[in-house]
Image (cartoon, rainbow, N blue to C red; front, side):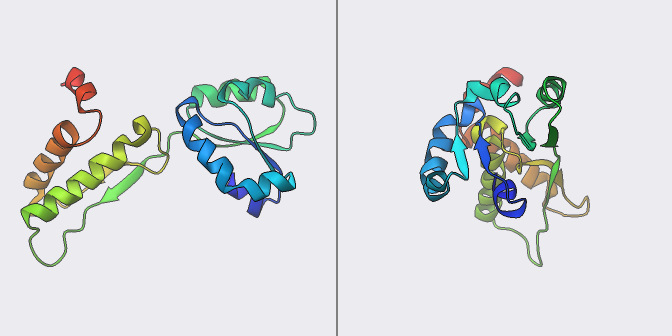
Length: 163
């Protein structure tokens, strides 16, 4: 949305994912000056199919699954700019001294939390963890991360189904 508005100089109609409708209501307030000027509009999550058929549509910017992207491409001749399933690395660089247990827990909790935000539907969330096999605290950190995922972060009750 920001890229289309400010870099591509396009007016935008923003359709949220159904999981993000409440969050996007906040964004609508944040971007109210752009709404007032006519550069930006927000619509309901169930209006996607109708949006692909609008007259004068220049580009469709899309983030989501490849199945939905294919459905959009099949339903319109409009150019599609999409990001479907990026894989973001998180590189653990431990530094020049051993981590304390508190630091290890803190970092594991941060990583687990960001991975679970919005049901995991966050484009920038880490999906690949990279550590040195020579890091002497690697196994302890991975165990702490597992605890943070299972025990210390939201949705832990859902994860019990997948153990």
